[in-house]
Image 1 (cartoon, rainbow, N blue to C red):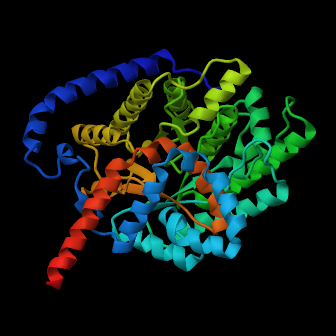
Image 2 (image 1 turned 120 degrees about the vertical axis):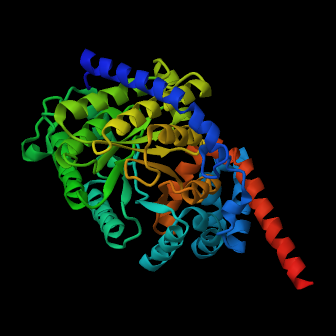
Image 3 (image 1 turned 180 degrees about the vertical axis):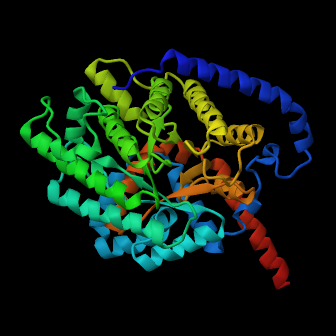
Length: 463
């Protein structure tokens, strides 16, 4: 859908990489000196239970209990069915009484504005920034109609308003899933035809009519673009909107629409961001294409860099359809892909921090350490707007809190809403991140150490 980088741009990238090698050599002595500096990346081992000293006694117990449940693959893989059965057995009221203080409280900010505000103030006191996420999305076969999409638009606009007006972050961000405003079926149709960025200009959305789409699809696309245009108009110069990537069968359309929003709203700064999934074999080329497009179209580029969360479904679908698996063959290759894309973006940011921005969205400690080390080497500010880190609320707090305590800008993805609204979202996130959930033994150990430390203090003080 997008052209590959032309030769001059490739030469420029090669030049950047040569500079980075020289920079690495020149920083060797600095790293030796930094071994004695408590703020050095070499000390970011994420093994200090004191990172949890800001958590209450109940929060420690709750996290330990939830993470213990998450360590059982059968529970995580079937959490949707188990939730449905439990709700039928207990009834809605009793079910909510069980879920609200446990799983819901661990991963969701709250339902009412007061509950959300309390969660955000707590997060702010810990040095963390909230990145609000309206827990609405759709997949094929789940389309709900224009009225529902208009209701979703209202929820998104309210999210923009809360993110901007409450003062919870000096550089507010929010997440957006395009499939909350445009049907997945249409995204698949748009992905299968050739539409250029010029044709999809949001400044000309009243003229949308593509021959590859039916009349009803063109009508729905027009309405969807109008909804997205309202999001852009409400958020520009106020809130940075991070558009989530989804499945490969609809991602080309999502990227095209996101690029159209960038073209209109990210001329002076990156107010619209796109997500790049590094578990895809084509992830590097897609990132390079996006960079070239931002150069050609003169807009600022914001990148949310993730490994990816739909691996099992993508592989099963590719096998079923008899096509090549789009996912890297191994975890090591995915790591190489992530680190390579991270290197490209950090080098660009070191040259033009006002044109490029990135959120290093990962729970992987090694990637975080790599990013921190390169930031130090390239002279990038820890609390600047150009580079920040991101993790899910309720997970990987030993990384988030340690980074924040060392002065880095850290965002937590924060869903909010009722139990009914957020549980489907949480179930999907649990299934997508089950490898992470089942591998959080280190975080459980640190939580347990902090809990034991507090119990010993109470016993000692009681004597």
